[in-house]
Image (cartoon, rainbow, N blue to C red; front, side, top):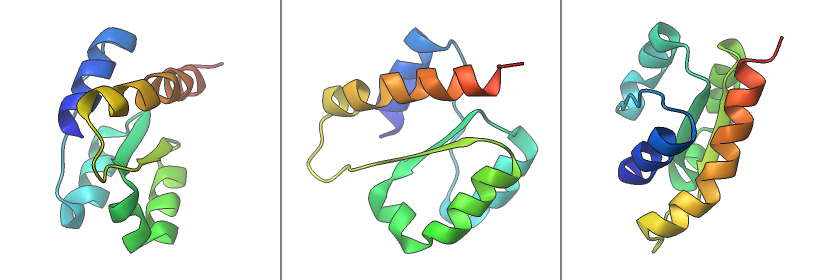
Length: 93
């Protein structure tokens, strides 16, 4: 997942990727205030309401992707348009 995000962000948005353990996510997101928060659907399902609230609080787009048996290339294809949309939303007037 991290590799796919790094590849997509480098090509699509030229942004920095920060990683975090779930237990530190709220602190990291609050400090960084990202355009997008990317996670696996499995982690999102663990506490979807809290992750959605966190994204709303920092005005980030939440992107949850299925990662079970997914290749980096598959993740990149799914992630690229969603990252582009997140950056458009983040930088709109």
